[in-house]
Image (tube, rainbow over all chains, first blue to last red; front, side, top):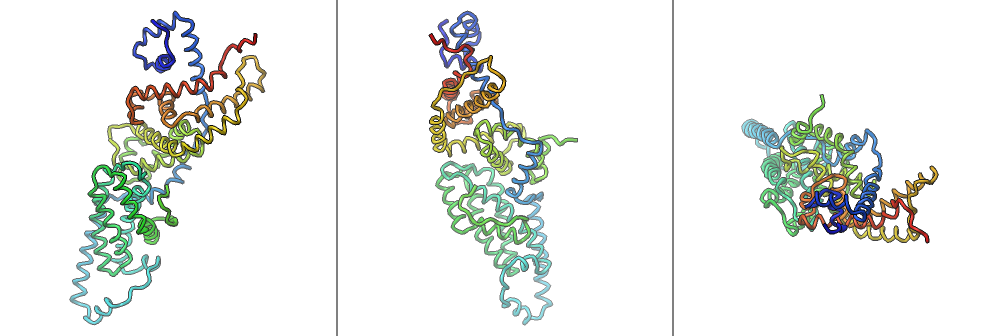
Length: 257
Length: 196
């Protein structure tokens, strides 16, 4: 057998060579190749011995502390559960509307409809009628899930294809719940939530109907729309105001990782 | 009783953040190790750990139940590290040139009879040389080398990770080793070169 060249020696070191036995045999009988292989082995052993900085036993906990807020508050409910809650709430609202229609004095109803909507703020969102409070709680979870999805899309590399398969099912579920919440918010005269959900819906629909992979131009287009509407920031603000997160929303930053 | 990865994963997939926390706490150090080997920088490695786990959380739906969580999360860590290496390739070149400028003197050779304090000094110096040699590798070379040398990943899988053919992966590993050897071999010579 001829002498082993450098590439063959490297392959032999990792046992990636095609003729392992022959190489072993040659190394046993050829001092020059054996010396070369020995030198290679020393270098690679030196690299292997290079230490990695130690991380304490509480490293995982530290990582979690930093990571947690980026995941959003833990949400154990599944999307279908949200839909069920929303459906029950809708039934309650419909019953309420029918009841009001039959029992409330007509002029009072008109007065309520024409009443100016108070300035939206955290106090108002957290307050309101029992039905409004239910809406806020349910919408809060919905917004958190939407926020995670928007963050995911916004942070994706616009020069590469984006794997949208994992997002599709989630987006489809979010579209369904988004419609219910938007209609409910409109019926309550909660224009701020309704408006946000209105802005959110086309993006969710697009993601739900996207192929398994978004091309860079498709991804960039969606990212641009999210950014131009300041959608992610609005969702974060609303999530914080509806009590969905204990975090303070960061200022809008384009494609921040 | 400790919750198995599979069970924790199953719960995490249904949105149970506490279960995900368990996985984070269990795997963070291992992810850090591979990230550090890849990036050669503690802060970058910490960032990669965060990004890896964030991606894992978001891609949880795409995880196949039959797969091993540790393998899956390592693969994500490798991809995150590779993204980082590629994005900072320009910075790396600058760093490399700086290192070369500082390194006008040939590296000290490792002599077995040296006194203890010198050996300690050499040990630190060796680490620096190994670090600099690793930094001189391109993103693909470094990834291929780390996966083969430290992670023991088969060449075929390295090829898949880098999106290249098996032969190209083999050659990338070879190029990495050749560069390392060129930088580090003087440090491990057993016999000093003959002066006469």
